[in-house]
Image: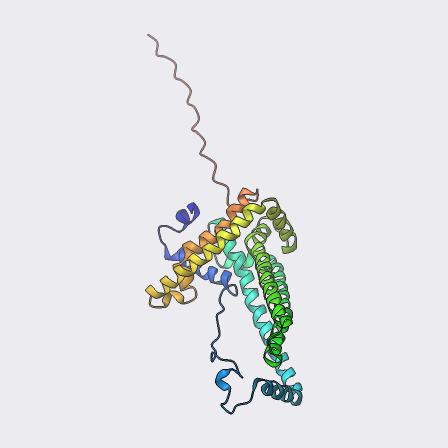
Amino acid sequence: MDLVRSRLFPFRLDRWLPLGFVTFLDRCGRTGGGTSGGSGRLPGSSSDIGSGGPSFQEAIENAKDWFGEHALVVVAIAAIALVVIVTIMAIVLWINSRGVFMYADNVASGRFDIVRPWREHAGLAWSYFGWTFGLSLVACVGALVMVIPIVLFVISLFTSGASPLPILGIIGLGLLLIVWAIAVNLVSLVLRDFAVPLQILLDVRTGKALGTAVGIVRANLGSFVVYVVLKMVFVIVTGITALLAGCFTCCLGFLPVIHHTLLQPLYYFERAWSLCLLRQAGYDLFPAPPPPPEPPPLQPLLPEAAV
């Protein structure tokens, strides 16, 4: 809080706006998502009974027949879509990797630069990108491994009726999916909040910095758990604040960069938070305070005047 107050106030647009842009890069690909709309009813539900439409079982059989006839087209379209999605994900994560280092550098050094940290930490950002891209792929593959059986169990419930095995499978895999999501997010948190600052301080690649960060977490496990819980609360508070800011600015507060500029004190506090924890653990990224001015040299005493 002292850092936020001393560096961001009084308000100066030439400082807040560059930090807002860098914050946008730091958050690129890390937030978002939403729910997709739907009709609110499933094929073969009670509203379809007696309407003359095909049953759910008939729809499944028709889908199997259509897929058998157009298997090559479906596989080709799926492969192209997969390549496009992975490419977009890689580009977004690469931009995010550069932004993470830029924002951490600015908060640690107290500067408001864009070009300098972009160039200075390029090599370290590539190493971080490799880890985040690999983590994203592992997370997606792991989620698919659990989601596909859940879908098959749901189809089995519709086609064969209720039975204990599909229900237990859905519950078990659903809980496992939640645990998987928590584990992936914890690894991502340690990477961004602790490994990246350690890379900047020690000038090492992500793997070595992550090993050091894991050692710090193990030695301070209770503090880390409290940090994670408080950070979840902070995310909720930030979301509510962002919603209010967007509404009171006629939706301008929802636009990228403008949003990050308006809420810069919150984002600056969040980024400085983990840096302060690392300082308590003995890894100080903040510049040392200037030494106190030297006292003026002592003047020789003048001899007493002769009486």
